[in-house]
Image 1 (cartoon, rainbow, N blue to C red):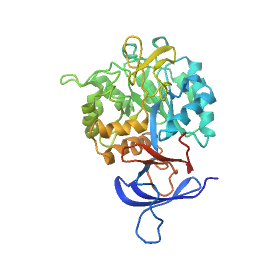
Image 2: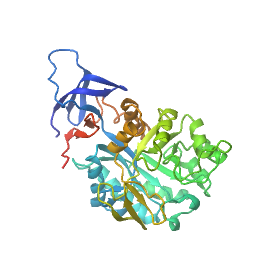
Image 3: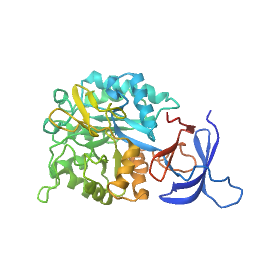
Image 4: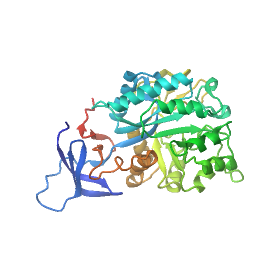
Length: 383
């Protein structure tokens, strides 16, 4: 049983920042969210901070020394707890290209934790398979030995491990054998995302017509936008149903690109971290499945310099969009809340400060530091 909380202060409600909002939390949900209209409302009590919905991370691998591919519940809970302390109240547990069984182990652990989330852990509200049906030419930090042709039977097996109704995202490369047939087979049950691909504009368009509707870390591990060969980025821009991911660490994408993409994909861009196990830890060498990754100066790289995920948090991604890219905070917040909720199909329960929704809330300071976190109605310790 969660406590009852009444918060009053500035809040991001219905797409705008309002100076005086009351939020009532009861039994893990928002019982009431309203603009102050009467003198009987409580005094402001969020210290001048801004109340916003809890962040939702669609694409995250690890943190605090753990990775979802570790395939055990303890590591899974460690990742969820670390990201909750940075304001991520819900996430999609993300796998890497690996063997059939290593991916299955990661999924089993994720589903077990999703069924019984701890009070100090972000909720697992979906799973995200980043591979293994990817292009070897755009493998990035994915394990090349694990890449293979698409298999409907293999995906059926993985899906059999989880509960009905759990949202799924899966990154695929359209040019890989069997991928278009896979999209057609599961288009109503999986959000297919195009990434780690060498596909041209025509191939990408065919995948979108087959049912794909998302782009994995736009620009990274795909052909660039070119005026005579628009590639996957151009195809995404022209398809109003296609959403995209942006890694706003200032390394994966130049701040000017972040700003341009925020305008181009104003209602269909989701901030993601793509964080690996070194997130929240000091510089050093860490494992990413079978790769060794060196973390230095805020970047995670393989020995050859290839980017290998990030050490980003959603809180820092929001701050970077404001401070590095110059996007107004009220335009940035939906990228971390409403848009990912829509992509996952959980927008009737999370992503907004609204009555009846899960009571996931973050209070941000003027400097976009975290003052308070509530997850499913529980106030979270930040130690």
